[in-house]
Length: 505
Image 1 (cartoon, rainbow, N blue to C red):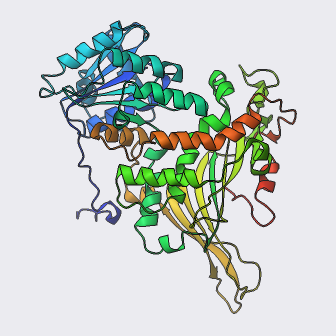
Image 2: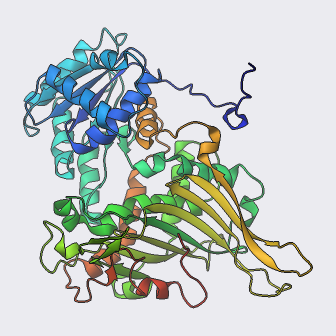
């Protein structure tokens, strides 16, 4: 029987990057993020041979636990997580041998001293090197004490091997707290050692945005104000709080989604072509975008941004409670669960092209999309109204890229109809890599391209500060102003103006 023909989409696909021997130290190793995302991502890298045999993991937590009990915990997490790759025979048993655990109070030195000893013991197995990545998978309140603790024990010192620190979001809660955290981190670490992780940048379609723009001559010439009418970026969630009321009451949608994830997508769409595909050039261009955005002062927020909070409604045929009815939410809470904002970039490429960004909870479906909406043809040669061409990047689910345009229907009449050319990533015949797998590997390789830099984080906070000042602590008597299962408050439609509308997703 002849062998099946190879999938042409998979030609040239291979993984060739492998870091030097190292230890991954996970603070908060028994937490939710580590269990659901981080441990499965690292296991996938190791099982694919990208981490080598000279690699180990030290879990660190405040929960008292032995090495053996942590190994049991980690393997159970791998067996139950939806993020875990197909487990090869014998892999779990071998991976188990790489796991160690330390516990203690993060405010004292004992736990950092024991982590240091673990790095010393790994030296021989790692060819005389003490390379280490410290991953802070903890509540943000612990970022400062952990960084300081590592500094007191000189665990950031690179005289015997490289040392890097990965810090989860949110990086600060305001511009002031973000700058304070940066100062604290830099009192111990050099900026080149700091990796602020945003898992959106590890998604395959987000990275493909740059490939589509800069790798195809048909797109870059029209990626400007002469041809683009506006850009829409949507990140919709159908879920409610899922037991996270304590966090969400403090954060709200601006801090949870807009300041980080959506700002990353925004800058990648709007950036200029970098002089090289490396971390310095790409991050420079992203910062230039944020610097060029017209600020939204506190007193002008009502003209450029809309906030919302969901009330009771119906989702997937089931009644769901409103935000204020969720367990743990304060009575009469004014925390927004929806935001839509219009940004304008004052530079040569994008002058006059609005960028509309929206995100919210309890919307009809879970979907993240970037849509570049082009201008209508200047002359109406055909009967009926013409729709605008749209190039859409689906970040989740069903990752892919589509191009919508008009085509003549069969027959004697010159009637046009919208058609779509659609590319889905499953055409490659391979599952998509976990964003955490990509980003953890990049950090171990010392590649910071997909990690926000200090000045980028600072400018992103500057852009949302007006909204935070206008909305934080104020009563919101109009809340709830959209029903669960709808696409948000009506005011968000008005934000688009008379001749534009949000895409149907």
